[in-house]
Figure 1 (cartoon, one colour):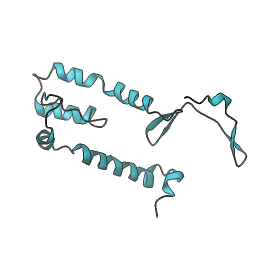
Figure 2 (cartoon, one colour):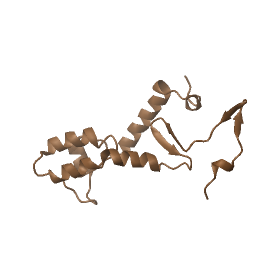
Figure 3 (cartoon, helix red, strand yellow):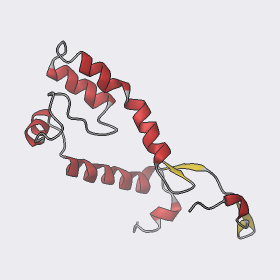
Figure 4 (tube, rainbow, N blue to C red):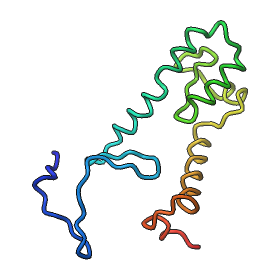
Length: 135
């Protein structure tokens, strides 16, 4: 069930009217009015869609080292993709991740959690989040 924001009463805090919006971006994350991440995921997919296809068709002409550099530069910041070694979807990735000197998915999640925490405390400093951390 979707909420029609046009029928909701005006939200006022300390005499200031808060307007409803369809999409917002906070700490790099796009969030829609229904709290979905669809626009965020679509933006990520559109940024990296062409790179794997271009590399896949040139896989026999590029060295693994060059493919690693290209993936690290263009894809890895968005998500992990194990096509460098032409692996099937169900292949065990641990030896290849070690060979590439990449983080495991669990370590990547922890790393990015630490990056977000650093941004909260030093760069972005949104007051609704920094209040939860001691100075």
